[in-house]
Each structure stands twice: as structure tokens, then as C-alpha cells.
Image 1 (cartoon, rainbow, N blue to C red):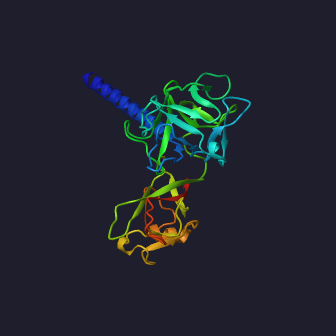
Image 2: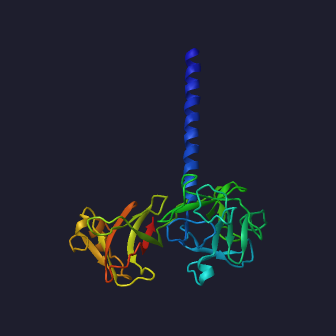
Image 3: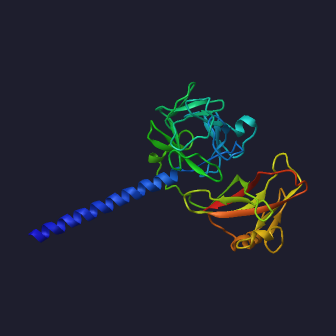
Length: 319
């Protein structure tokens, strides 16, 4: 009798532990899948500042979110390309103290403003996601994806957008009426697509301290969760205000002192893109997976010009 009671207690404890771990894994997965937004860069220091205008793109459908009239739901639409100054940078994330334009931090309460629409706030409605416009700021949003209190950075960083009234993240998800947005708890999708999706985004090779007489430039490319991405190509884009430079990408396990030589690096000019064979030469594979270190040096026509950041366009695939 005593033995049976003991076994029953062990069984109940085991089942309870299993259920707890299952729920915890589901919560963790949902949280990771909610971090699916890319904030467009609009500052030179690589940090997300309060009140700075920027674009907002979903990495699920690869499109930008902007103001646009529609018959049902809040007036938001998707666009594959952004045109014009205001549409290119439609979003502002603002803290309560508008004079404080220092970098925002994860978990900080902010208001979200959209060009031509106004401030976004939670409000129940008949059609579409429960969002509405407001003329005044509504500080009911948080940016997630990092440790609370730490500054929000770019460099391929994916973030989540959390509403404190809905107590949930806003995510891309198909619906019958209104724009394809839902609260994460209402979206039955797992966070993964039904097939490979090709995405592209501008990152920055950042200048490091001079080493061996040459200034290295580095980007540790990582598009964030879920871990199903690989790098497809790197395109060198022209740095504004600078001309006459060539970028040398260092091959894996090659010494930096040999940067610029054919045996140790791949040379690209602004506008040129890596081929599959060049990626294999750089990383030993045509599908390098995060975290991918992109280390480079440059040759300049005018060495007196200092370039702190070199923009690169990276095309990557989520499987």
C-alpha cells in the first residue's frame, strides 16, 4: 500500500515536471518567433535612438510596413519597395521625455508614430487586428529581443514589438480581413515559413583599431532567431561622401597581415557582389551560417579620408 502511494506520487511529479518543461519550451519558442522585425538604420553609431525616423520590415514576408488606406482594419499596408523620404522612414519610437534622444533600451516603454497615420495604440475593433490611431502618444509599447536595460543595436538585430495592453507581441500572420498582422497568441503559425525565403538587408562593416599598420573592418553577421538562415551573397555598396576605395574580404583562417593579397582575400569594388565560388573560398562553403565573421581591409585612392563604416548589402535565405 505504501509502495503504491509512493509510486503514484513519483508518477504525478514526473508528469507535472514534463508538462512544466513543455509549457516553458512553448513560451520560449513563441518569444523567439516574435522577434521577427528589422528596424531600419538611421544613426551612424549603430544604436536605435529615441525619436529618429526609420523603416520597419517584417522578416517573415520580407516587406515594409507603411501607412496606406484599406477598406477593413487599421490603415496599414505592406510594400516591397520604399519610395520617397517619408515612406522610406515611416516609423518613430519615442520615449516619454522627447528631449532625451539617447539610445533606446530593451524593455523601455515607448510610443510608436507612423508618418501620415499618427500614434498607434491598442483598441478593440470589428475588423482586423485590435489597433487604432491616436493624435497623442500612447506609451504602451516595448521593444524586445535583448536583455532589459541594454541598448538596442543594429548589425542584423531582430526585435520583437510588444504591446502592454494586449500583453502580447505583434507579428506577421495571415487573416481574412485587414492587414496580415495578429497578436502572437492568436497566430497559429509556428514562426517558420512553408519554404525558403530570400531576404536582404543593409549592414555595416565597422572600423576597428589599427592592427599591423592596417585598419580592419568587421561585421559579425547574425540575422537572429530562428536558426534557419544562411548567407547567400555580399554586395559592397558605396559609402556616402567617399569614392575610390576597394574592399578586400579576408578568407577564413588566413592571417590579417596578408589582407589584399589574392591568396588571403577576395577583392570587391562598390557595386560588386560575391559569387558562390567566392563564398566557398571565403568560408569553405556556399552556405555559411551565423554567426558569420566578415573581416576586411580597404585600399583607398585618398588615404587621408577615414571611412568609419562601410555599407554592405547582404542577401540571406531562411529555410
